[in-house]
Length: 413
Image (cartoon, rainbow, N blue to C red; front, side):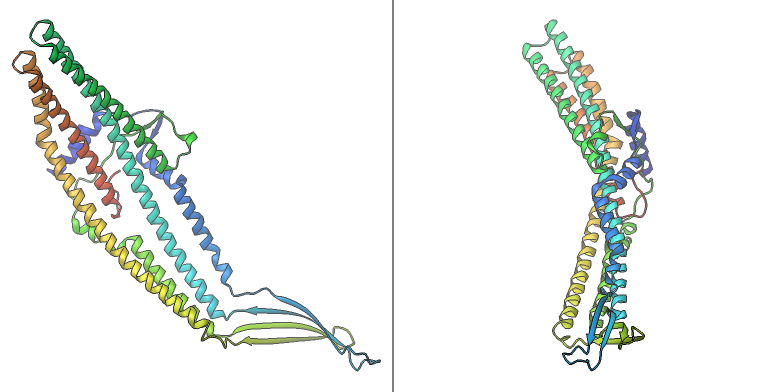
């Protein structure tokens, strides 16, 4: 039955209208365009590039200091001694501290790479939603055209019956109002289509100069024929990049805690000297020093506590993320299951009965076996059935796209 359902969707529905044109955008092309042009993705890529070079700022190297000193300057003549020297001094943080900070930054970069994957998946989902909305809007517009065609046929039938004296002026007026309402529905459908198109263009990141009425869309959406198991979806929970990125951030924070603790270790300074004892700069010298963090109880200890509290915050964020993912996966799967059942019901029974009722009612009216109100009601039942079927297909593919966000393979392609 499920295979029949999917076949019915693809063959009876999506193959009933062909979209062709020179400026054709397929679903796959729309997604790739969004990944290249969407501003959110490119902004995040820029942030990732900044993170990639941030380690250079944590090497622990301070600017070297060049100095000149002279000793033995006295008012006594001759001077008791005369000494001068040139020196250059370099200070640097304890190497372990720099190593731990750099390791922390690399782990943050890995977490950001996963966050970029999350963003790309969100953009992909948004593009698929908008693409499905565009196809839905196109079919809705076609349905409204069919509604207008039926309204015109009804009006002509009432007009002929009035001319023969079988219908009243009130019947003709009601048919005219029905025709006007059908025309208004086409305008509403046209507005829906334009809104869907520009929502898609926006999610793709197309510039205004690249957006055009000549752009067409390929109507060939497909999906898996096998039933998607709930456990299959839930088993992806802890493999979601949102969750894994938080794990990497926790590891990064552990490195930062260790780095903060290493601040108790002394900074190092080394220097090189060229000395002149009155006979020229003929002597060399070196010096070394340690910067003892005697105020560690105030400064370093506070830094350690701050990093620990930040780690605790990230851990709770990870728990929140896990709970949110579980809720979203459950909601996506149940929505998918419900939309499948509804679509199957329309596809197997209700839709065909509505079509048959509409055809029989129009023929009965022409033969004088049915009054106008019952004919209009029969047509509305038919059109509502067609619209519900169209909405069911639309919802079914939207639910699949939302479930696909959590799966490792494409469900709508």
